[in-house]
Length: 80
Image 1 (spheres, helix red, strand yellow):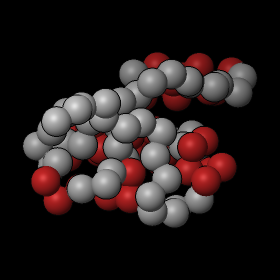
Image 2 (spheres, rainbow, N blue to C red):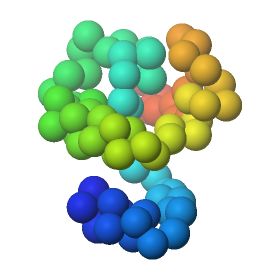
Image 3 (tube, rainbow, N blue to C red):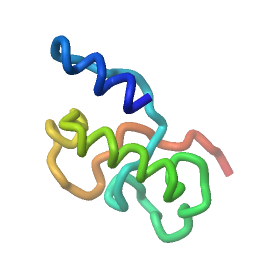
Image 4 (tube, one colour):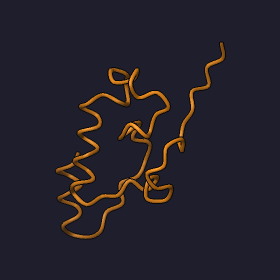
């Protein structure tokens, strides 16, 4: 995926959008310490998102909201 985006970006600017389902850093979760093996916060997923950022793409959520804790784009709807 990253190679494909990089190839496209050589010809014209690319916007890759969608729901990536990745909590990129610890500030993207309320309880990061208990989520390291859960989907969306595995090391592999976070490293893949890092690759996109290193290619020059931007995490627009964090660009708008900054590196502020307690600001999320998704909350679990579980009821106990």
